[in-house]
Length: 387
Image 1 (tube, one colour):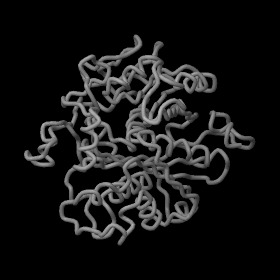
Image 2 (cartoon, helix red, strand yellow; image 1 turned 45 degrees about the horizontal axis):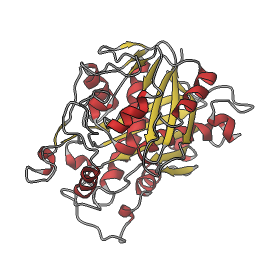
Image 3 (cartoon, one colour; image 1 turned 90 degrees about the vertical axis):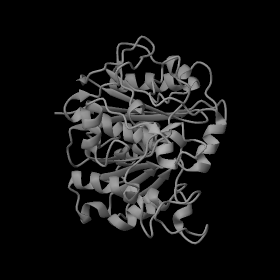
């Protein structure tokens, strides 16, 4: 029954879509979901020159970025900085859901990340003793998942998703598939990336894809690249408890065209959107991937059209790589709790004739969230409010 659930159809015996019962968030905007809600409601962005983090002698000092403060929040004698960020948001979502040890024990757990444990491994972390390459689990993608399983006592289905920049949204989609198929009653989804590591930044810079302005406006002709940022997010899902919102659809596909590039014409994202419309109805709001690179903007213009409003969140938080799809979903879902949608930063340009409102607007129907990974990996989740 995996395929029907992936397309948004419910298997026999499942009468409702998974509810969102808990959220967690951590980024440059703050340490919890409410701080993100307040910052975005007030039009606040925490994007700054990287010299404030890395020092003015850094090759990247003049480039923009966004990071989590204080750094000690992510410092631990055992767990990596990435694991600490993941644990921080996981505990938030679990507390919001009200899950005790018994409910956690058999819940499914899925973690999404692109750069895994690069922070604290490929480069030193302030205040943390160094680890030899193979002396600890700190060098593998799966350590954050292991840390959460151990610290929270989770022994159920356990998965790691590393599909690049779409990893967080893919992790959420996998959770829906597992719940729809009856493998668990509850699922905790976490996504995390801390990409502000000098070695990674060197490679990003060499790619020519890093932006130069702290004001990110992804569909503007002047936008010249993405802004790397740190972030983590968590979502608690349940088919036996009711929340204010549900995930009603998830699907993904591959363009099957290039190992890193995006095909002209937007690839196969349009087919994802068509399937979602058939299952859920026309979107009333879309949160696109919208990184700020010219190639991404050209691809998205090819499939963005209609009367839905656009809600671009990277101008507030930067591009948190594998965490981006889930972190932006958490922000959407927090606004949807009030039956509203997040505003855009003033001056944000829309695409395909679609407007990017500068004020928070009512949520009147299905909300589509898109994410894309290098190599033509496309993902789409649909959220709806419920009374």
